[in-house]
Image 1 (cartoon, rainbow, N blue to C red):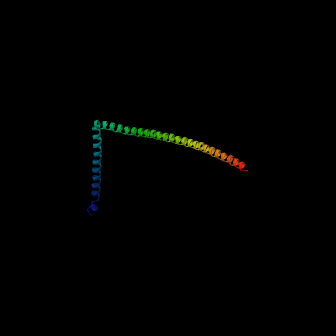
Image 2: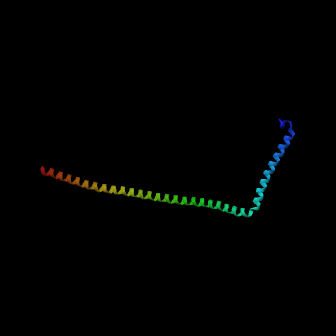
Image 3: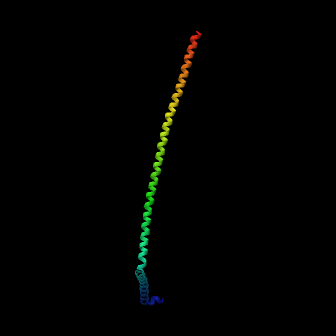
Length: 127
């Protein structure tokens, strides 16, 4: 109720309080700036270290990516070499299978022809 009756005083008080708050905030900011400027001798080496750390981290990331690429290439090359060897062995196995089948067929053919000749000979002999 008093605030309503003394509206001008209340407004002036609110304005004063806002100004004090803003002044304190600015003073704090200026103190920070002053401390930073005052501690420049300490902050320069720290900032240099921080930049170096960021750069080293970036370089380590690049090196890691390169190593991963090289390892992947080696693994792919090893896989393709293995794949080529497997294909070559399969081809050789198929060729060996055909050769064995021919030899077996030749043996069967010779046995059949021998039997056939023998059967014909026996027929002639029995006539």
